[in-house]
Image: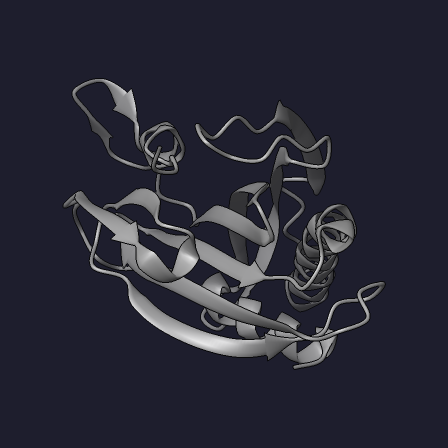
Length: 203
């Protein structure tokens, strides 16, 4: 899968989700180093070969995703051959995702030139700390806000919160893709934070 195809894969996540509620379930992903995660919906799993700029070998990327409360919830994982590839792959995953979101924003603004809000912005939200993860200075989180192409109106708002981290030779990307509707709060908790804080490795 080329970076262009990776963009097509991610583009499917730009569609607005329609599931109405959050129904949290805990999962231990045996084929992702046993990572424990809580999804607010039942995820589907797909697997693709992914080529990233600056990474020599294609990655076999597994992705779990589902839609709930107007958002798409995603976890992706790929196992590498060498520890020397981890940092470069984390950076390449973040760059590829950002690049495709920037492309989507430009396309949306071409389709709906009168729509100027929200402005495109990328916000570094700091280091990622997942219990049991392998420490790495490239384990970072960020938020991108902008526009997405929309078939009915030409464009619509999009916010993506993403976290990149690793465990041994496995690299991960966890993300929440939100459209216009605000996410539901349960027991006063922000659902995006619930998703992130539930991530941890056994041991």
